[in-house]
Length: 506
Image (cartoon, rainbow, N blue to C red; front, side, top):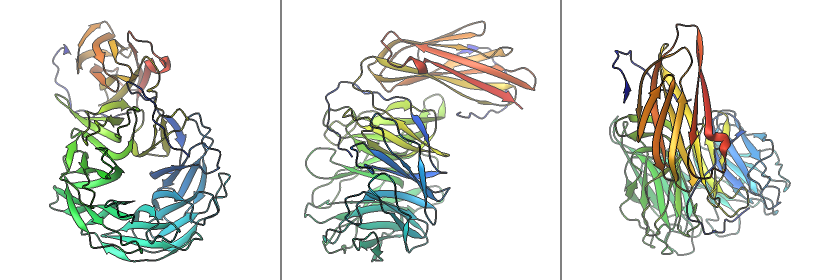
């Protein structure tokens, strides 16, 4: 800790298609996100090849602007300008299938009051939404052929139920049977959990315990193969769920589940892994990454070792000695192939991510990530694990009261190799008075307005930061801080080695 003790007012910290074939690599790394416009409050995200050019595209459900966004991929990790299509109510989730059997991918959206299908023209454009009215509170949607007639059906959550709607084969549905889940249904997935060649449903739902303590379980509805389902069997998870995904985490040919769940009002969303037994049952959940607020989760092999890994979108985490730290990030948990996962590797982002999914957007046979961000954007995070070197990056997050400015300068290693001799140099704002600096690892020293932090080594996906406090000039003022990070290793992306941030008042 550098600086002198000083009585300070309270401060608030603010933080500014296609199958993937594994390719053998050693380490893991990701780029900073490439930001694209979406509608307002993107709530759901999915991928598909909508113009049949062999390049993966993206579709987004925007709950704030009552539309969906289509972004066509160029095949190099970048996308064409977004095109929006209206839906009648606020959409909450989105999925892809060929609902009218014309060979073109279509999109289904669960809205607050209806199901909308936008039929694809095969060239990346879509017809106007065809709507099927229903529950006033549709949420999550899953697609599957539940009655085995060759026509895609959908299952949607609504309140304490999951409703099955059987497809007619023309892009419309028959309103079907609703099944009670025993709690507020949050997420639904369709898969064959008992290996009888009939699709089953997994529904993650929330159960009220107290105003501060949350409960939840996963309800498994085994399918009869005719569009109906057996009564559910419930498997307890550690709190209120937010997202769910499917994978074979111990590679035994049996599908498993991963659920993000929040145990109480004070805790972050944690990762619960439930291993399947092959008969439709699941083991007691194993909990991973309990320190981070993991809102959404996706499954893919991100490091090419043939073992399913997890990607989670995170908005905050708990750091010993610092408490709750608000920091947008994508966290990667590499799978061990036995149902367990390694400690999370953090890839700091420049915007808060929400829902996320994985896909190979640049056709390098590595799983990339796309996130639906808070506000009006999505972010495409490219997997750089096949490259050599260590991509170190600098970020600055500012906050505080009017004249007591607290900011954090972050050095992160996006990989794929470990970075050694990581040095972060911060040039404090001109005309400010230095108060203190504290760091999460290594040592920091101060000379005049320059603070130099030697963080030592950073593994791929790791980060370290220094928290710096200065007193600014009397208002009105505009002060700018700049930070630079260096390391011994070759850096394939030097553009993110320098960060600046301007703090103005008023």
